[in-house]
Image (cartoon, rainbow over all chains, first blue to last red; front, side, top):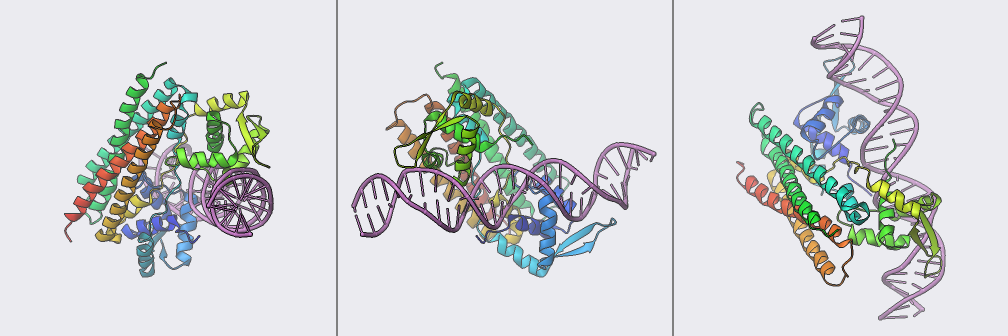
Length: 180
Length: 180
DNA sequence: TCATTCATGTAAGTGGTTACATGATTCA
DNA sequence: TGAATCATGTAACCACTTACATGAATGA
């Protein structure tokens, strides 16, 4: 029912930071938001047309032939604020790792250990990329008003990854003690 | 492309624990797996028919008129093991809270604080339900071979929730210090 | 008897991915 | 000149939710 079009929110928000082409929009999602948000071309381009029709963004010719840069209009800025203020729509959880562990008795302890080791490895690699993002933000980027908010999201990712590592250690130890 | 039908895996796994009706299956998902998995009737009933056609489960009349209890067949047990051993399919992330915080400059610090307070409250309530699940498992339920694996998933939920609370505290403090 | 729970299913719609098609521009 | 990148879009498909329709059994 009157569900918020999350893609519209994401696109308006990104264009609020700076005007962009659809292509650049997707790169921005992957780079800056990649660890907690995703959009594909199949979503972005239709959304850009819908938002243009609605008058929330304006399409202007870009540097290259055929490319278009989109900018927020005043009504778009109002719409963005409106969408931002709506409560986040809860996503039904679908955690394939947990599903497999829940059926761990059928899967067997060794396969479970392997799954957990993989999860720990993934979390560790995430911590590295977060460190990279922090370093990048501290160094090259000039201090913007977005800075403190972006750090909040990076910090959330770090906390989650730390928790995953700690859980993995504990769980491996627990499986080790399991009577065969 | 040859994607694993996650619903099939979930249904086979649950029926491997004990034979059930479609209705009971859904309750089991909500109760035991609710915090990391979800299935709706619109998924479960078609899946049950598909799995029956494939010979992975068997349909037998249940206690009530018109009801059916489904049981794993031998080939179903093999199929379950096969699906369990396939790597979890990564879910594209879609975190509405993080999206809003990323655009926190547009949203404003007060609204951000409220979002974080809500997130902390949610995490705290989750911790309570996990404590309840632990208590329930320790007390009424007899010790099954599934027990240690189920604890793994509860523990994962707890770690994640603790991390969310810690992150929320930090983030609230950070927003407090923000120059207006 | 009447509300609630148990039980099975379908239809419509949504939100999303993937693959495909096309072509300009840049740079080695 | 040719590969990689920039750029826009569509079509097909998929998984999933929600709402709807139906009805038996239970229990207050």
